[in-house]
Length: 375
Image 1: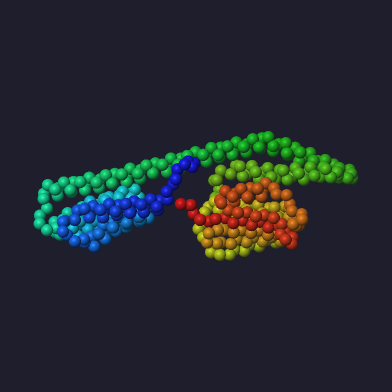
Image 2: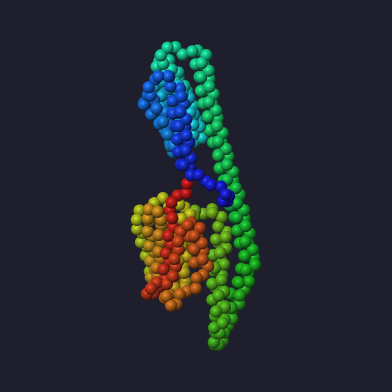
């Protein structure tokens, strides 16, 4: 990032252009007044309005095109023989926004209206050569504005396509690397962990069959082997996920809670507020937070009940998962990789995560995710 460059907000630039064009039109109109003629308030107002309307050219290019065209005809009728600079800028903005056909039709209508106004309103005939020269000049300026807008539009479209191509290439390379890591993990770890798990289970089985007391260390190895097998299987599944299945999101959270309830945990889901248009990334992160929290509760918390609360706010999605497990402020569990992964997901979205024991008994996970759409 170039820290030496000062980025001017688009709205500031639009207003600067609008004020500059308005000042140019007013100055040109003032210098072109006939000697001894009094100021025409309506004409000056149309000149100013024509320039200031350009401040909205990004938000409503066609409206600005119509307003500047009508103002140009209006101040022409009021006696101001001023080139329609604001209309040319509006043509550039409308073509850049992709409204080529409407802009061309409006420009032809605009030229005809200016010619009719010059013939009907002005006193006396207009010189043939100056009139033709002015018409050619106006037509040339219109073509130049149209061409400039189209050139910028095409350049921006190519830039967007290039950016999408870079993102697709990076995503494909990441998928290939993820699959490569999954194969390496499978080849290097799965076999070894399976041997440890099988050997420990055989040793426990033989000891019990002989009536011997099984050492605690052997039981710990057996349990660790089982847990490692489950974790490795889940990790490989996540690495091999190539996004061919629909992504999980907010709509799948009730299924998570129902599944937790079927495993013996009394789980409830509460939803508050009106659901806004939540970005897909926020929905996926919310699902993963609830999934990881319920998994930890089922495996480690020793809880009988768990509650999931989702609060839809105007600018954020708030999630809270509580349980009545064995965690206390004096006996807080050591954070694992699951909690670390949740925190990284939330931080990447600009949100906040808090996880810790409750004041009485149990554990709480709270997350707040912004839901504002990116421009």
